[in-house]
Length: 337
Image (tube, rainbow, N blue to C red; front, side, top):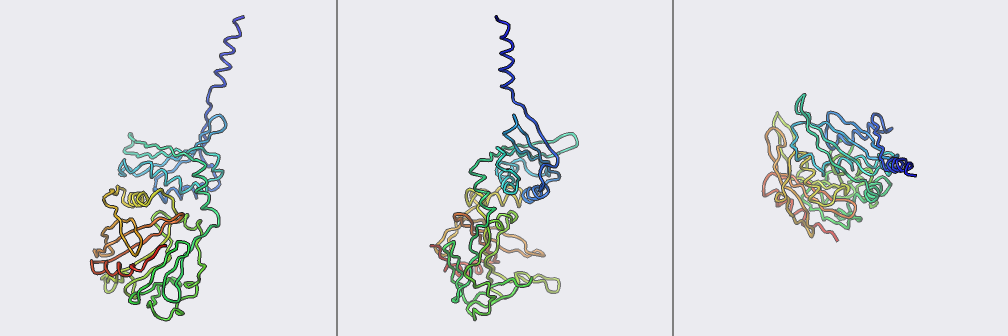
C-alpha cells in the first residue's frame, strides 16, 4: 500500500519545478531601432537582447551592454537603467507580455577581467500605460506670439511679455532671421502667430536625452550667439531659448541629475541644484560655465518647471552679471496661472 507514495512525491516535485528558457539573437522586427534608442542614452560597444521565459510565461527582457571601462561604477545605476528602459519601451513589440527588464552593464577591464552591474526594472501596468500614452496623437501647444508681442502658451497657462529692446529669433529655411520685438507683428511668418500650433507627444518622446523641442528663442542682439571672423570668435549674447520635453522622470531634480550624469559621467550634487525665480514662477536649475569656442567662456543657466505631462525648459546663456540682469528683466513679465 505504500508503493504509490514515491510516485506521488515525484508528481508533486514535477509540478513545482520552474522551467526557464532564454532566447537571443534577432528577437524583434525593429531591433536595430531599439538598440539605437539604447545607444542614445548609454553608448555601448555591444548590445545584446534576449528574452527569458519561465513556465511558458513571465517573460523578462534582458539587455546586456558592454560599456566603456572608464565609466565610474556608481554611474551605472538604477536611474540609468530606468532611462534605458523608458527610451525603447514604447516601441517594444508586445510590451505588455514582459513583467520586467533586466539591464546588465559589463565593463571589460582587461582580456581576463570584467565587472558586471545588474538592475531589475519592473514593467508594471502603470508604467506601460504612462509610456503608451506618449505614442498616441495627443498634442500640446507650442505657443504663439500675439499682436502685442506676448508669447502665449494656452496649454501651460503661460504668458511672457516680450521686451522691445530684444529680438525674436525665427529659424527659416535653415537660416536664422531676427525680428525686432515691438515692430510690425505682420513681419513674422504667419505660423508664428497661429494660436493652435501644436507638437505631438510622440515627437517629444523621440527627442534624444538633453534635447528640448524649441518653442521660443529671443536674443539681445540681431546676430548669432557666436560668429567667427578672421579666425576669432565674436560672442553676441545674452540668449534665451525655451523648449519642451516629456515628463519621463519623477521630479525636476531627478531629471537634472540624470541629464548631468549622462553628459559628464559624474554626479550632480543636491547642493548644486537651486531654485530660480522668474516672473511669478519658480524653476529648478543648475548654473555652470562652458567654453563656447576657441577658449571663450560663457555662463549657462539651465532651469526647468514641470507641468502635468510636459516640462518647460529654459536655457539661458550670458557672459557676465550685467547680461544676467538683462535676462532677469526680460523674464520679469513671465506669468503662469
